[in-house]
Length: 413
Image: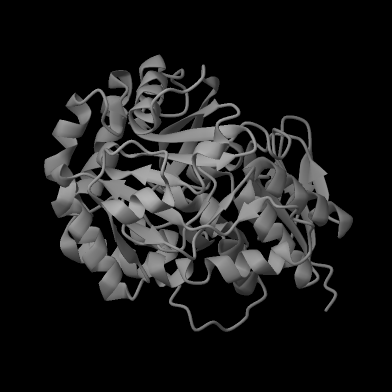
């Protein structure tokens, strides 16, 4: 089918590019806008590289509220606050607390599971069209923990069992067989054999972006400041230019709120700041990504070396990188693997997060030709293609057997 419907997308990360590729399959004419080049130092570049279709249990859960004070006080813990940002975060935190009941947690888990279940097949549709060259490994993902944290772990295992998520509980001997280089800091774990990981997320994103250009897609490196309307048709506005479209998609992650706010829609998007460092030439120490649940960090073997990722820091988009968070990652990596070389590439990125830990996918409540696709928190990389497929289906007016209401922005109004 050929259509001359013109679609503009803000955001050249995994969400924007995935949306563009699925729209092209339906014959739409697509232009992507971003103030940076695709694959620049943003979330699609710096993430943990997990394709994690099992990860349906959200952070908003009843046990988290009792854990937060201890997490904040611990220097090795997964959580930190930039104190200058606390006043701004209070409304978000209050909504988060309201969403941390068992009922709300199950609502989020169920609706994450619905899309996570389709995440890998959606990737495969895109991967069929590019040369992957060993950039994706199918070796599963391993979570390990020690006895201090068993209640939280049991909750996750139980919820996933209830949702029908396939998981393999492993004891310390099996963990040792899977990953012999890890120090014996663990008592048990869970292994997801069907999960995958990226050897280099940036390279994968760029291959998908090049496919988009080969298929006639256009890219403009400009910063879109606002969306205005002629009749109902959206126009992207920069300082000096205007770009006219039939429909547009906002898919610029943690920066999406700057635009949705101007559309008079109060979506409570904030950012969890995540960090990474690399230990070069050490990727032989692990076969697959390993996450140590007690300290909330993970290590992925990549082309760049071992990528150590983790920590959640609430501090907005403007605060500088925290050296203490970087040090925390380095110490955690050495705690898991012992002696490592000097670290490199200190990186800070922004995970777009909503207080109920569900993304926003679908039309804006006021403007039927504006679509949102953001707020995927820790799962943006995993959910890029399935999100793009869902938005494409909406724009093409296709029927779906998915329940898409839980992802609508109208839930906040």
